[in-house]
Length: 117
Image (cartoon, rainbow, N blue to C red; front, side, top):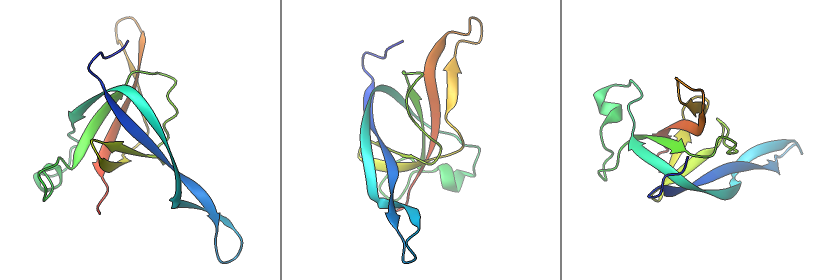
């Protein structure tokens, strides 16, 4: 399934750097980005209090739900998604988005929570 008026979101994945002991650790300073086209974006509702779900100080929603139309999209729970110029952390695991009657896979549902800053 494709969404003709879908949006492009950017998947950010932390890279790795050496810490002071020479161990490889994840770092957002070394992150890579990959665009994902044709996504549906809706204001989320993660079951949090109204204070958390409310818009942030700039009037943007604090949580979103993104519908990715590619069932094979490479999105991990540890990634971040940039939507409309704002960065969000993934809440939980990306879930399969499928027709409950036929099992036809449409893609992934990803719940997001705004990253401060």
